[in-house]
Image (tube, rainbow, N blue to C red; front, side, top):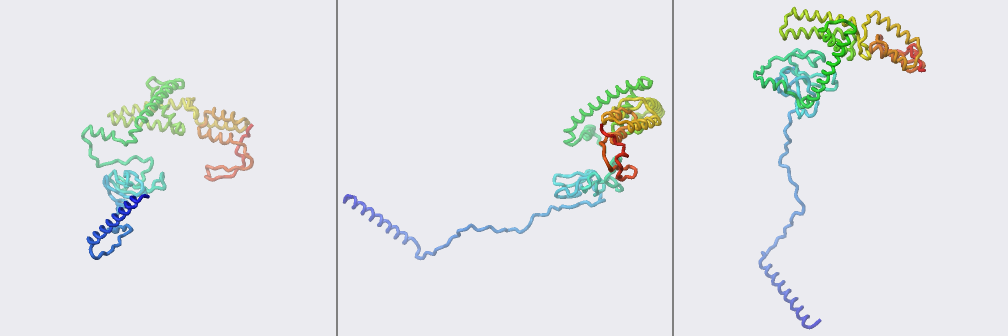
Length: 365
């Protein structure tokens, strides 16, 4: 290292030391004579709660007790969850509030169709109890103001829920298909009845409608006698109702009823329905039918055939109803069982232990 470089380094060091000394002196002159040290916080302080109050209560509970008179829109219960379910003439809001949609009296009750639910409904009259019997007629409503404007009346009649509106096209299509199917079946029956009994041309269509109604009743599990009686009652009721609406004279209504009754007697005495295929068959009296049933049962007990052959014999017999046919198949087409079996006795309403041989089980070949 040269002499000149050593001298330059010494000068730089001396100059830096001089500046530092001068700066320190200047700072000391500017500061006050007494300096007090202050210790600052090293952790953030937590906030304090200024209000110790809770939120206001929601005022839940039963607002209208059983038997209380309510108007449309009155709140009966405010709740969280469905501790109570809406019953007759009540609805439930999205916050589970149950309110009345008809004026009447509050009823808190249980429904046999929903045994685990407590329901709240509104009875339209003070002496009525809920639930309304399943097949009871609807209670008439009074106190309504008539809608004078035709447009408003049509809008009220057409008012429906969104779910009903979405299902309406499918429902109308199904009803139209059912009407077309019934009309085709009625035409077939009207043509077939001529082969069993002579009827005037104007009575064939009416006879086809009667046979169609009887067939529908049979498909629903009715006996032939009950189906015929119900069909006659429905026709007489409808003709009287239509006469009152159209202003037909009572004499004309009586004449139509008498004419229908005569036609129904001819048809019922001439034809019946096969209980399995629902085809028209010649009518058999009650005595002849019971004798035929007894003869067929004796033949079933005496013969030993395969299960398939016995099933065909039972289905081919037109004298048995659907229930009787099912009982025969249960007795004669069951598997062979050794020993004793348990059988429910309908007369005593008890389960009895009977020897399997006494039940008439036919061995499978």
